[in-house]
Image 1 (cartoon, rainbow, N blue to C red):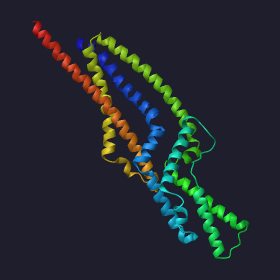
Image 2 (cartoon, rainbow, N blue to C red):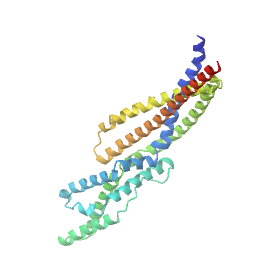
Image 3 (cartoon, one colour):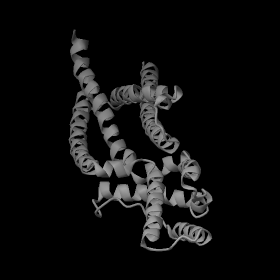
Image 4 (cartoon, rainbow, N blue to C red):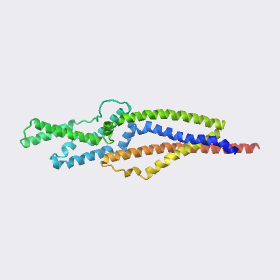
Length: 297
């Protein structure tokens, strides 16, 4: 009974510390990994979103050739895969500015359409000359309408993470408030963790090896509780079951989820390994202590 009373406070404090550790680390991951420009740019590079987006454009303009009579090359020769890459990066940068700094009005992806405008205009003028079509105001309106439609499609395709939709629904403001709440939660968690840690130190009464034991248990258990499910999701390729029509959007969504899962799993594996090291040190210190006692006797 005496041993139970002796260990019960430490067990309770360790239990609380496990969940505080998980909560604190998850908050850090949300603030410094999940919603950062680097995260989305890394996913874009890993998933080759520029290549997939350009392939989607090729398919779109080629499928429209029969209905519009405009060769796909009129558009594709003026827009390269590198242009799509810059458009994707611009969409990410614009989104992060709206999310973190609330900069600018409207969601604008920066892409240079100078070559596209020249290519489309030249095609229409050549077609008009070959077919004796008058280049009046109606003609110019058709050219402009075609350009606007093509540019809108290209910008839509470049917005692989659908930040434009998020902006239109006003979700950036909600996400910004969400981040502010997370910062407050993070502060509370840090304070609570410090208090619980101090109480645990007091319970151990200056016994460093015993403190290592309880901290080792805390880190190992909290690390395994999150890293094991993350490893399962990655091993089973869980997110590949998602159904998204456009290849570039599918790659962006599943790539982002896999990226977050991998980063979360890695972070908690490190926490778990730290706990194991603490436990190994505790075992080594106990053996050394027992050896010294045996020698003294």
